[in-house]
Length: 300
Image (cartoon, rainbow, N blue to C red; front, side, top):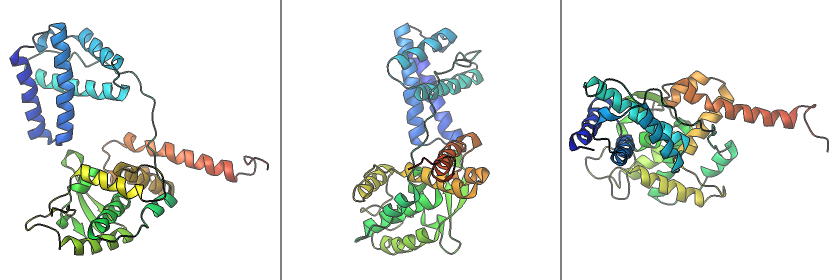
Protein backbone atom coordinates (compact mmCIF):
# COMPACT_ATOMS: atom_id res chain seq x y z
CA UNK A 1 0.00 0.00 0.00
CA UNK A 2 1.01 3.62 -0.31
CA UNK A 3 2.83 5.10 2.70
CA UNK A 4 -0.11 7.39 3.46
CA UNK A 5 -2.44 4.41 3.79
CA UNK A 6 -0.22 2.81 6.43
CA UNK A 7 0.02 6.09 8.33
CA UNK A 8 -3.71 5.90 9.07
CA UNK A 9 -3.11 2.72 11.07
CA UNK A 10 -0.64 4.56 13.31
CA UNK A 11 -3.12 7.41 13.76
CA UNK A 12 -5.84 4.94 14.67
CA UNK A 13 -3.62 3.17 17.22
CA UNK A 14 -2.70 6.54 18.74
CA UNK A 15 -6.43 7.31 18.94
CA UNK A 16 -7.02 4.03 20.79
CA UNK A 17 -4.21 4.76 23.23
CA UNK A 18 -5.43 8.23 24.15
CA UNK A 19 -9.21 7.89 23.96
CA UNK A 20 -9.86 4.25 24.86
CA UNK A 21 -6.78 3.56 27.00
CA UNK A 22 -6.28 0.08 25.65
CA UNK A 23 -3.67 -2.13 27.26
CA UNK A 24 -0.35 -2.71 25.43
CA UNK A 25 -1.40 -6.31 24.72
CA UNK A 26 -4.66 -5.20 23.09
CA UNK A 27 -2.86 -2.56 21.05
CA UNK A 28 -0.38 -5.20 19.90
CA UNK A 29 -3.28 -7.41 18.76
CA UNK A 30 -4.86 -4.53 16.83
CA UNK A 31 -1.52 -3.78 15.15
CA UNK A 32 -1.14 -7.42 14.15
CA UNK A 33 -4.71 -7.62 12.79
CA UNK A 34 -4.38 -4.43 10.75
CA UNK A 35 -0.93 -5.50 9.57
CA UNK A 36 -2.47 -8.69 8.19
CA UNK A 37 -4.97 -6.58 6.25
CA UNK A 38 -2.17 -4.38 4.90
CA UNK A 39 -0.30 -7.48 3.68
CA UNK A 40 -3.50 -8.67 1.97
CA UNK A 41 -3.90 -5.27 0.26
CA UNK A 42 -0.31 -5.48 -1.00
CA UNK A 43 -1.01 -8.89 -2.56
CA UNK A 44 -4.22 -7.59 -4.14
CA UNK A 45 -2.47 -4.35 -5.24
CA UNK A 46 -4.91 -2.13 -3.41
CA UNK A 47 -3.11 1.18 -2.93
CA UNK A 48 -5.60 3.01 -0.69
CA UNK A 49 -8.31 2.21 1.82
CA UNK A 50 -10.94 3.57 -0.56
CA UNK A 51 -10.29 0.63 -2.89
CA UNK A 52 -11.51 -1.95 -0.36
CA UNK A 53 -15.04 -3.33 -0.64
CA UNK A 54 -17.13 -6.13 0.92
CA UNK A 55 -15.79 -8.70 -1.52
CA UNK A 56 -12.19 -7.94 -0.53
CA UNK A 57 -12.92 -8.23 3.20
CA UNK A 58 -14.82 -11.48 2.69
CA UNK A 59 -11.90 -12.85 0.68
CA UNK A 60 -9.46 -11.68 3.37
CA UNK A 61 -11.43 -13.44 6.14
CA UNK A 62 -11.72 -16.65 4.08
CA UNK A 63 -7.97 -16.72 3.40
CA UNK A 64 -7.14 -16.14 7.05
CA UNK A 65 -9.38 -19.07 8.03
CA UNK A 66 -7.96 -21.25 5.26
CA UNK A 67 -4.43 -20.48 6.43
CA UNK A 68 -5.18 -21.83 9.89
CA UNK A 69 -6.69 -18.94 11.84
CA UNK A 70 -9.49 -20.22 14.06
CA UNK A 71 -13.05 -18.85 13.91
CA UNK A 72 -12.62 -16.84 17.12
CA UNK A 73 -9.40 -15.27 15.85
CA UNK A 74 -11.01 -14.41 12.52
CA UNK A 75 -13.93 -12.88 14.42
CA UNK A 76 -11.55 -10.78 16.53
CA UNK A 77 -9.65 -9.71 13.42
CA UNK A 78 -12.85 -8.60 11.69
CA UNK A 79 -13.85 -6.68 14.81
CA UNK A 80 -10.53 -4.82 14.68
CA UNK A 81 -11.14 -4.01 11.01
CA UNK A 82 -14.64 -2.71 11.67
CA UNK A 83 -13.32 -0.38 14.36
CA UNK A 84 -10.57 0.88 12.07
CA UNK A 85 -12.95 1.52 9.17
CA UNK A 86 -15.39 3.34 11.45
CA UNK A 87 -12.48 5.59 12.41
CA UNK A 88 -11.71 6.21 8.71
CA UNK A 89 -15.37 7.11 8.15
CA UNK A 90 -15.19 9.58 11.02
CA UNK A 91 -12.07 11.10 9.49
CA UNK A 92 -13.84 11.27 6.09
CA UNK A 93 -11.29 8.98 4.40
CA UNK A 94 -13.93 6.45 3.28
CA UNK A 95 -17.72 6.64 3.05
CA UNK A 96 -18.84 3.14 4.10
CA UNK A 97 -17.51 0.32 6.28
CA UNK A 98 -16.59 -2.63 3.99
CA UNK A 99 -16.41 -5.01 6.96
CA UNK A 100 -19.81 -4.08 8.42
CA UNK A 101 -21.74 -7.15 7.27
CA UNK A 102 -18.93 -9.70 7.15
CA UNK A 103 -19.17 -12.52 9.69
CA UNK A 104 -16.55 -15.05 10.71
CA UNK A 105 -17.31 -18.80 10.58
CA UNK A 106 -19.09 -19.93 13.73
CA UNK A 107 -16.92 -21.45 16.42
CA UNK A 108 -18.01 -24.24 18.69
CA UNK A 109 -18.62 -22.82 22.13
CA UNK A 110 -15.88 -24.07 24.41
CA UNK A 111 -16.51 -24.12 28.12
CA UNK A 112 -13.63 -22.87 30.25
CA UNK A 113 -11.87 -25.51 32.31
CA UNK A 114 -12.10 -25.21 36.07
CA UNK A 115 -10.73 -26.77 39.22
CA UNK A 116 -13.15 -28.30 41.68
CA UNK A 117 -13.17 -27.18 45.31
CA UNK A 118 -10.97 -30.04 46.49
CA UNK A 119 -8.40 -29.33 43.79
CA UNK A 120 -8.26 -25.66 44.76
CA UNK A 121 -7.83 -26.64 48.41
CA UNK A 122 -5.00 -29.00 47.45
CA UNK A 123 -3.32 -26.25 45.44
CA UNK A 124 -3.50 -23.70 48.26
CA UNK A 125 -2.35 -25.89 51.18
CA UNK A 126 1.27 -26.28 50.11
CA UNK A 127 3.99 -25.33 52.59
CA UNK A 128 5.89 -22.08 52.01
CA UNK A 129 9.52 -21.79 53.06
CA UNK A 130 10.71 -18.40 51.77
CA UNK A 131 9.36 -14.90 50.98
CA UNK A 132 8.85 -15.54 47.26
CA UNK A 133 6.86 -18.72 47.84
CA UNK A 134 4.74 -16.85 50.41
CA UNK A 135 4.20 -14.14 47.79
CA UNK A 136 3.13 -16.81 45.28
CA UNK A 137 0.62 -18.24 47.75
CA UNK A 138 -0.76 -14.74 48.41
CA UNK A 139 -1.20 -14.19 44.66
CA UNK A 140 -2.95 -17.54 44.24
CA UNK A 141 -5.24 -16.88 47.19
CA UNK A 142 -6.16 -13.42 45.87
CA UNK A 143 -6.77 -14.67 42.30
CA UNK A 144 -9.18 -17.32 43.58
CA UNK A 145 -10.68 -15.25 46.41
CA UNK A 146 -11.60 -12.25 44.24
CA UNK A 147 -11.62 -13.59 40.65
CA UNK A 148 -8.99 -11.18 39.36
CA UNK A 149 -7.63 -11.05 35.84
CA UNK A 150 -3.85 -11.40 35.55
CA UNK A 151 -3.43 -7.75 34.46
CA UNK A 152 -5.54 -6.62 37.41
CA UNK A 153 -3.39 -8.59 39.83
CA UNK A 154 -0.02 -7.24 38.64
CA UNK A 155 -1.44 -3.70 38.46
CA UNK A 156 -2.34 -3.60 42.15
CA UNK A 157 -0.64 -1.13 44.50
CA UNK A 158 -0.40 -1.53 48.26
CA UNK A 159 -2.93 1.28 48.68
CA UNK A 160 -5.52 -0.69 46.72
CA UNK A 161 -5.73 -3.28 49.49
CA UNK A 162 -7.83 -2.58 52.59
CA UNK A 163 -7.02 -5.29 55.12
CA UNK A 164 -9.40 -3.93 57.76
CA UNK A 165 -12.35 -3.79 55.36
CA UNK A 166 -11.21 -6.99 53.57
CA UNK A 167 -11.56 -5.43 50.11
CA UNK A 168 -9.36 -4.67 47.14
CA UNK A 169 -9.78 -1.89 44.59
CA UNK A 170 -9.19 -3.17 41.05
CA UNK A 171 -8.69 -1.27 37.79
CA UNK A 172 -10.30 -3.49 35.15
CA UNK A 173 -10.87 -3.38 31.42
CA UNK A 174 -11.81 -0.01 29.98
CA UNK A 175 -10.23 1.67 33.05
CA UNK A 176 -13.29 0.73 35.13
CA UNK A 177 -12.73 0.47 38.87
CA UNK A 178 -14.51 -2.03 41.07
CA UNK A 179 -14.25 -2.88 44.77
CA UNK A 180 -14.03 -6.61 45.49
CA UNK A 181 -14.27 -8.60 48.73
CA UNK A 182 -11.21 -10.55 49.83
CA UNK A 183 -11.62 -13.82 51.71
CA UNK A 184 -10.32 -14.47 55.20
CA UNK A 185 -7.63 -16.92 54.12
CA UNK A 186 -6.41 -14.56 51.40
CA UNK A 187 -6.17 -11.74 53.96
CA UNK A 188 -4.02 -13.96 56.19
CA UNK A 189 -1.57 -14.77 53.39
CA UNK A 190 -1.49 -11.14 52.26
CA UNK A 191 -0.59 -9.94 55.78
CA UNK A 192 2.32 -12.39 55.79
CA UNK A 193 3.44 -11.30 52.34
CA UNK A 194 3.33 -7.60 53.26
CA UNK A 195 5.82 -8.31 56.06
CA UNK A 196 8.10 -10.11 53.60
CA UNK A 197 7.59 -7.44 50.96
CA UNK A 198 9.03 -4.78 53.25
CA UNK A 199 12.39 -6.60 53.18
CA UNK A 200 12.49 -6.84 49.37
CA UNK A 201 10.79 -3.80 47.84
CA UNK A 202 12.83 -0.95 46.35
CA UNK A 203 12.25 2.57 47.74
CA UNK A 204 9.33 4.33 46.06
CA UNK A 205 7.83 1.17 44.54
CA UNK A 206 4.09 1.05 45.32
CA UNK A 207 3.31 -2.31 43.68
CA UNK A 208 1.61 -4.84 45.94
CA UNK A 209 3.46 -7.76 44.36
CA UNK A 210 7.15 -7.38 43.56
CA UNK A 211 9.80 -9.71 42.24
CA UNK A 212 13.21 -10.56 43.64
CA UNK A 213 14.49 -7.29 42.15
CA UNK A 214 12.13 -5.35 44.42
CA UNK A 215 10.16 -3.96 41.49
CA UNK A 216 6.62 -4.70 40.24
CA UNK A 217 6.29 -8.29 39.07
CA UNK A 218 5.24 -8.81 35.44
CA UNK A 219 2.43 -10.95 34.08
CA UNK A 220 4.73 -13.49 32.44
CA UNK A 221 6.64 -13.98 35.69
CA UNK A 222 3.35 -14.59 37.53
CA UNK A 223 2.34 -17.21 34.97
CA UNK A 224 5.69 -18.97 35.31
CA UNK A 225 5.59 -18.95 39.11
CA UNK A 226 2.03 -20.33 39.20
CA UNK A 227 2.91 -23.02 36.66
CA UNK A 228 5.91 -24.01 38.80
CA UNK A 229 3.78 -23.95 41.96
CA UNK A 230 1.19 -26.28 40.40
CA UNK A 231 3.90 -28.62 39.13
CA UNK A 232 4.95 -29.17 42.75
CA UNK A 233 1.41 -30.10 43.79
CA UNK A 234 -0.45 -33.37 43.35
CA UNK A 235 -2.92 -31.98 40.78
CA UNK A 236 -1.04 -33.24 37.75
CA UNK A 237 -2.61 -30.56 35.51
CA UNK A 238 -1.30 -27.19 34.28
CA UNK A 239 -2.59 -24.18 36.22
CA UNK A 240 -2.72 -20.59 34.99
CA UNK A 241 -4.20 -17.39 36.49
CA UNK A 242 -7.37 -17.45 34.39
CA UNK A 243 -8.12 -21.01 35.53
CA UNK A 244 -8.45 -19.67 39.07
CA UNK A 245 -10.76 -16.88 37.83
CA UNK A 246 -12.94 -19.46 36.05
CA UNK A 247 -12.99 -21.62 39.19
CA UNK A 248 -13.93 -18.59 41.33
CA UNK A 249 -16.88 -17.76 39.06
CA UNK A 250 -18.12 -21.34 38.79
CA UNK A 251 -17.95 -22.09 42.51
CA UNK A 252 -19.64 -18.80 43.37
CA UNK A 253 -22.44 -19.38 40.89
CA UNK A 254 -22.98 -22.94 42.11
CA UNK A 255 -23.44 -21.62 45.64
CA UNK A 256 -25.30 -18.35 45.08
CA UNK A 257 -27.26 -18.77 41.80
CA UNK A 258 -26.77 -15.00 41.42
CA UNK A 259 -25.68 -14.43 37.83
CA UNK A 260 -25.86 -10.63 38.09
CA UNK A 261 -23.75 -10.65 41.23
CA UNK A 262 -21.09 -12.81 39.60
CA UNK A 263 -21.14 -10.50 36.58
CA UNK A 264 -20.39 -7.51 38.83
CA UNK A 265 -17.59 -9.30 40.63
CA UNK A 266 -15.95 -10.40 37.38
CA UNK A 267 -16.28 -6.95 35.83
CA UNK A 268 -18.08 -8.21 32.71
CA UNK A 269 -19.70 -5.40 30.72
CA UNK A 270 -22.14 -7.84 29.07
CA UNK A 271 -23.96 -10.53 31.04
CA UNK A 272 -23.73 -12.87 28.02
CA UNK A 273 -20.01 -13.20 28.86
CA UNK A 274 -20.91 -14.38 32.35
CA UNK A 275 -23.59 -16.77 31.11
CA UNK A 276 -20.98 -19.28 29.96
CA UNK A 277 -20.68 -20.23 33.64
CA UNK A 278 -24.35 -21.23 33.72
CA UNK A 279 -23.46 -24.01 31.26
CA UNK A 280 -20.75 -25.19 33.62
CA UNK A 281 -23.22 -25.00 36.50
CA UNK A 282 -25.74 -27.08 34.57
CA UNK A 283 -23.10 -29.71 33.82
CA UNK A 284 -22.38 -29.91 37.55
CA UNK A 285 -26.09 -30.24 38.37
CA UNK A 286 -26.49 -32.93 35.72
CA UNK A 287 -23.73 -34.98 37.35
CA UNK A 288 -25.34 -34.54 40.76
CA UNK A 289 -28.68 -35.66 39.32
CA UNK A 290 -27.16 -38.74 37.67
CA UNK A 291 -25.44 -39.75 40.88
CA UNK A 292 -28.23 -38.96 43.34
CA UNK A 293 -31.68 -39.26 41.75
CA UNK A 294 -33.31 -42.67 42.37
CA UNK A 295 -34.56 -42.89 38.79
CA UNK A 296 -31.24 -41.87 37.30
CA UNK A 297 -28.77 -44.03 39.24
CA UNK A 298 -27.51 -47.12 37.50
CA UNK A 299 -28.11 -50.35 39.30
CA UNK A 300 -24.97 -51.99 40.63
